[in-house]
Length: 334
Image 1 (tube, rainbow, N blue to C red):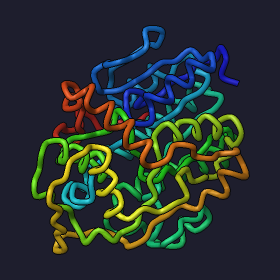
Image 2: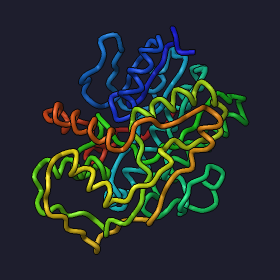
Image 3: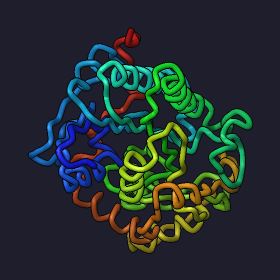
């Protein structure tokens, strides 16, 4: 399906976007990337455009003559950042998502993938797609969760009003891998712990008691799931992309120490929040509808992430960080 198609990947320099770009090239697509990051390690046959998707005019320009859009650009941050800088999450997500989808509609884009998130779900142990609107997102994910819900709702509104039903909606779980955000102030659990261990932190202080269980999935698996979703299930009906398995934070720490060969003393800071005790995605729908099966084990993924980090230590702090940059415009697409 992708051979010869003009495909735009927003956030194509990032965690999921970069492996997705490689897969699209292998599939014969003509790929364009838009990002605020510097164009590091971008294939020569890919068009790179640096720009701000919060700007409606820019969105309309970058999507011209595009067949498919994978909209992955967004805002990443830890639980602490999500609570302290909720407006940065909420407003920036709304601007990016609303502008990009509207620009794609106006340009007559054939198919569109919206990368939603596991954070849209209300508190639950097992996340099943049809239960997402049974209550508000859990408190720690509130702002990002509502913004992602609005993106899903925007897709449904377009299907109802304009008949544009070729929109795939995926909800990835906690994703990790090369090209991740390793900034200690904003990084999620795996990249944050990996960097702190490699930087020699001893004792290693970890929030919570380590018992919280999470579903972690490798970025390459998610990218492959997105390709399948746009091809086989572009119908405005969300599907989860995850491993379908749970790992405790203690297990994560143990595996990180194993792959790095480090042995610091571990101190569990039980005064700090650790979130809901158990969060795992049901991926049976993804298996049934698109044939999605994750293939990279957690330990394999951690090793690959470690190897990439060690080879790219000089560039990991050059990523654009929305929490230190103010939005320059609030003009939505008209």
